[in-house]
Length: 458
Ligand SMILES: *[C@@H]1O[C@H](CO)[C@@H](O)[C@H](O)[C@H]1NC(C)=O
Ligand SMILES: *[C@@H]1O[C@H](CO)[C@@H](O)[C@H](O)[C@H]1NC(C)=O
Ligand SMILES: *[C@@H]1O[C@H](CO)[C@@H](O)[C@H](O)[C@H]1NC(C)=O
Image (cartoon, rainbow, N blue to C red; front, side):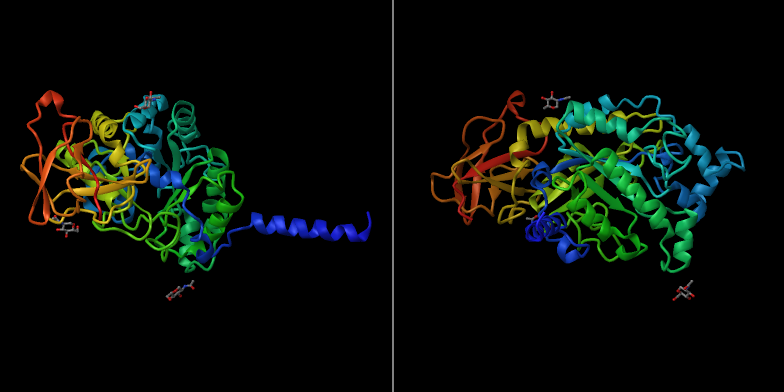
């Protein structure tokens, strides 16, 4: 080949290379990646917190750390009273039996909830992996406990039966890993733990299971330079098998939360109550005080469906997604209280999904007069604005809304799932909406009703 022919080929390959390596491992570059649209459109996800902590199933999933790290008296006493003196945390793994774990049944429940994605805990801070990781010898769900690939089985059931997106949760740090403790003692000037555990494991997870979300956690003790997370994200966005579809969160290093990454999770149960400039997620629990299943939880500890729906409305109104947590039992069941909430949520979304999925925040997030009314909006096929007012109750009549500014008498108000328009008139600066008496059998849903408004000018 003549020398002259080399040049264009070299230029071409250089060009291809620079296209492939679009994102650099800097936040400026990584944050410039547009968030794949499916995530914002889905609005609702289910978080699944499951692991060896589901065996003691006491207080919360930080059991090992509270017992051995903090020496919290409640946990120390629980162990003294119920276990032999030489019982170790690792001994709980054998009792992580998962004999009732039926991924198809789980997936049917998740699907019935109306969720568009799940986030499954693959490794919490104990380091136990719910998949047969090459980097977690004898401390994984294949070698110990269930003797199954919990992640793989769920991924398969989800993908064969539904269109729900698979997200994977992974903890960067581990409470008691000797290499981590050594790096920490060295003020993070060494990276043995990151090089031999955290990063190989993350690449393995992505290559094996091709998640649509990588939901990172355990970020708060060290910087993203120590964790090498910017390098990981550059690979994830440039050349991983999920580079075009994957979405990430913000927990990549102690300086990053609420600032950098894909969507922002900020703190657990984050729900700011006002519009946020960036896409965010409210990761919250149905059991008010724990992510992992608690055997001794009382009914009052669980959010009611009314509370869950108000949380959903306030979250989506302010531009967030709602990630609702379930803690399965160590034998692999989704407790009926969780199942009931998920099915209730699903029946509500069947009627009112139009006010949630693919919506955009409106100019007002909540009403200016009536408390507990949250708004969302969308454009109809002709480009006209539709405004949805999500009400927590129908007790006060008329319903007075101070935020919407109607055009004229052509402005309509109706209720999702109910036919016909409602009469309204101005009462000062507010719309006073007369909801007719609706018999119980005609009520479109039992909790949180949605008014749909057309011809709104603000
Ligand atoms: C998932 O939910 C949709 C909507 O309710 C339903 O049509 C479909 O049959 C469900 N699929 C499974 C596998 O449960
Ligand atoms: C880590 O930092 C602390 C506080 O700055 C210092 O006292 C300690 O000697 C450092 N340790 C190492 C191993 O560098
Ligand atoms: C609307 O929400 C804001 C912020 O959460 C709150 O301060 C205000 O009281 C709410 N308005 C009403 C009418 O409840």
